[in-house]
Image 1: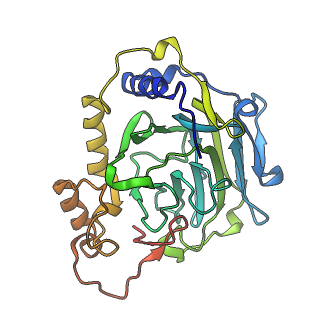
Image 2 (image 1 turned 180 degrees about the horizontal axis):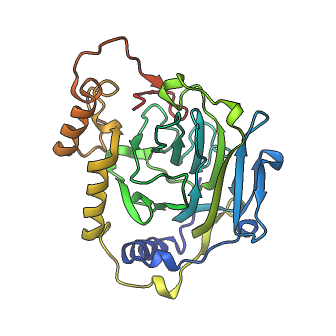
Image 3 (image 1 turned 90 degrees about the vertical axis):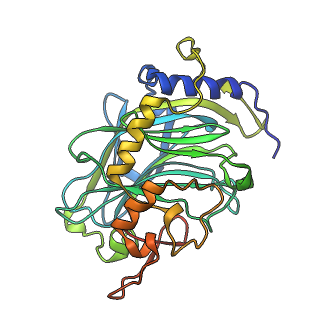
Length: 334
């Protein structure tokens, strides 16, 4: 596929500047019907009367979801999300980018996945990245949160450029994934749509399937609002990407990446809340994938958290690894 990148390079620079400067808070909010359309779930998707928010629900019949009208080649994408409360084991809420409908065998994907839990246990968040169908290398990271995501709305954002992907929660970067030459085509590089879904992930989402969705607590309802679609929309017919949302406020000095103050916040988050990273998983990868940059402090913290997975220790009591939905590869359910 030959793609025209007209206007995209300027957008990349402006996006880095917008996010680093905090100006992303001034990006326009897109009404649901202007940016998205119903994907599945019949009446389990309800648009609120203000037109700016929507709720998705999961019950015995079906889950639900929506998808962006446009494909995008790079951009800043965001939504405020409130997750279901109480017993949510087996429930998966996802906010992600994908082109799996266009490229079944070599798709790209950038994921936020929210994994439910039993009563009294917190939601967990998983991020993941695929490029060119590289599902044999799962690039998962998992985190706990410093708040209850079912109490109120929180903002979850993805910055995707030609050289890096950054995940944010409430404006705080939690993961920075940089493109390297060794990755080849494994870095997402084809146009993608935005998706949001809620579905039954009983087979893997909570303790590897030990705890399943219990529909006596249904419907499970998650709410989305404050949609930001700030990127280069892609025309699949013309094979060009030229419609880019570049505003005057985004034309500021170009940073080199995550700012020093943001990096401090990111490192604090990862030190306190990261519970799993594929780069340190010695069971899955005897040698870390090429793109991994090993941080000795992170390695030591994770080793203390799980000496078997991250330290090569012996496994006791028959504890097993389970397959993740996305990769089909083994990932420790932490």
